Each structure stands twice: as C-alpha cells, then as structure tokens.
Image (cartoon, rainbow, N blue to C red):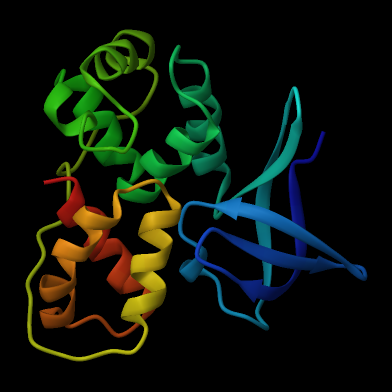
Length: 194
C-alpha cells in the first residue's frame, strides 16, 4: 500500500520515530530509531502490517532493508518484531553470510530466535540474500562517557533484548568511543550478537 514517505522527523523514541508528512505525524517502528535526527528531512521506506487487532507502519532506511524485512516475514516463526530486531543487529551482508554459511549460532543471538527458527531461516532464505563481507564489524573500545547511552540501552530493550543482558553491556558501552546514540546502539547490537 505504501512504498515510502518523505517528511520531517518530528520525534525519536527508543522503539519508533514520528515522521511529519503534510501535517500528519506517522508513527514508524524502526530497527534503529537513533539513525534519525529530530528536524531532519528524510525519506523512509515503509511497510504496513495488519494483524487481527493491530495495524503498524514499519520504517526502513532504504529499499534493501524493506525487502530483507519482507523476506524474513516469509519464514515460519518470524514476526515483525523479530524481523526488525534482526535488521537492527546485522547488516544485510552479515545476515546473508550467516545464512549462506549455515551459521545457526549467529542467528540464535537475535531475540526470540531459537535453534529451530534459525534453521528455518537458513532453509527458507538460503540463496535469496547476497552474501559478502564479515558477519559483524570489528569493534575497538576507548574510554568515553556519553549521556546518549541511556537512550541506546532503552532502544535495545525495546527491540526485545532482556534488560539483564543490556545492563551487562553498560560497562563496555561506557568504555566505547561512541559519539552518538546510534553508535552506542550499533555497538550494543554487535556485542549482544557475540
């Protein structure tokens, strides 16, 4: 029904953004809300998901992420929340590599993905995503304090990661040289997938 929306980012929350388009504020559930900045004019690719008692708009930075999201939804056992968490944690190339290499262990690091679902992802999507590059980027840490850490940890919890697991990451995230909430979140997602 919708392909994309162009507008101004009106709000950023740990689980969603609000995109103002022609006087209407659309709540878009996104993988990493801190990729967006309040006040920026942007294009967000969207997917409308209608369930029995819910309607939600999911937002994506580009068409590739939207396509990957829709491919993940074709897998038995994967819902929109799990698909969004997978997109938040791995770039498309890393996910494709995990699928191509039958890396069940990598896939089970995502919230809500058990061994059977990981095997189903591999079975259903093998050969459908391009594989190249490393599974996860190599990260280095340097000590720096940043007030945006609280927003990043709240977003990780909103994606479905257990509060205990996120709390254990706080010392590592605090020691990281992250300049933005987006950088903290990317590092947190990487650490949670190890």
